[in-house]
Length: 232
Image 1 (spheres, rainbow, N blue to C red):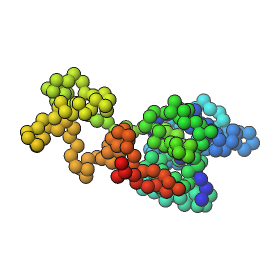
Image 2: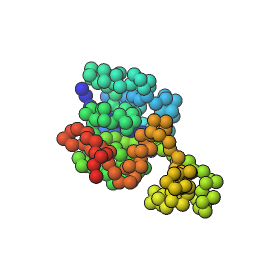
Image 3: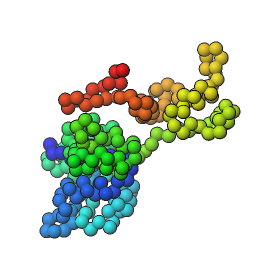
């Protein structure tokens, strides 16, 4: 199978995306005309078309053609096209699909686009796409869908706080000050989450808390991903 360049969904990094797109086919297309880049994804065409228009409208060296494929058919159609040597130049996929497609990804060496450039260009959440051990990135972020925590104004004020904590380091003290206990039983929890099965995006919430606390979830060793969540 041919390799492809992965484009992951996080924040707008126009210069970086353009650089990789031009690199994929050279500065210009056949006959000195603009390079044509084929982009596949399962994101709604109207959203991607709007982004393409705003991002590349002033670049005469590049023409980006987007093909929308429903998510339930995306992986199969992508693999079949790549097996026949007809895959796209770029793809829009979520970070969850890195593990499945990591062997088909054309990575970007830090010598071409350094870790410092990456961190200066994109939001911190995009750093999940960096492989610092092997000194490359899997791709560039384009759109972010953040995990958001809502807070109860009455609960915060009743506990004597003006505002909820803004940093995770302040959270333990906030929890101690807002929780209500009767003996060993909790009558009012500071953070109400419920059970794993009935929480939407529970995996994303748990992963975020683990990573922000400095923990690890998986690591890549000799080309394979290994779970390290139970290591101390």
